Image 1: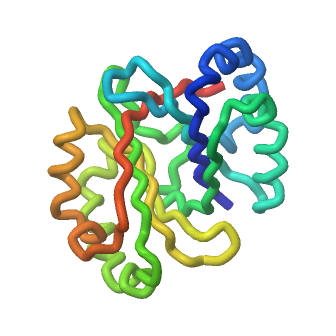
Image 2: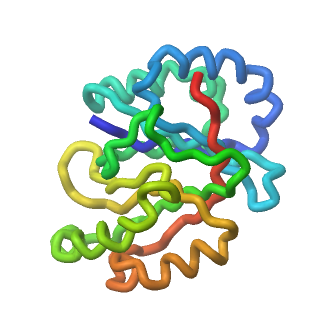
Amino acid sequence: MFFHFHLIFDSSTAEKRQNSRAAEEAYLAEIGDNLVLRGEIMSDDQKTQTATVMFVEFDDLASVRAFLADDPWHKNGAYKEAHINRWTNGLKRTPDTLPYHEGESYWHLRGYGKPDTHARRQEILADHIGYYAPHDPDKILIRGALLNAEIDEWQGSAIVMEKESRENILTFLADEPYYVNGLYDRILIERFKVMPRL
């Protein structure tokens, strides 16, 4: 079972995070290849880290909650918000199959699904998959649906993709089927710094 972590930092904890980074990375290393992808969410000028995003495999929701509870940055109050969703790993990516290209610009897209759009999403799912298909081999690091943590109800999308700029992302989204059909309440677009495997 896969999960998407979106862990937003308290801006006052930068020094605390830096001082405990070694402990954080040692903790994450314990889950090995179950950590499919992690990245730092950066300001557009790439000077400030605002959050961490992880795509992780766990047995169940209880294991996820236990993992977060013992996370060093969680325990020392670095996160002001912690969002966890089930996630579908639509491309079945593993740490070894991510088409990462050093030096390229990557973006984390989190689409927040509107309430009661699950049925409409099912109707246009094939169009959505087809729209992404030409980009999947080398431009999309990872993508999949966000689901309610406890039931299979669609709540949005989480994607990491390569594009030169925010403007290029907006151009890409202009014809994206979920976007065109109004399934998203909003889409968060964040610069994503791919972090190395531990």
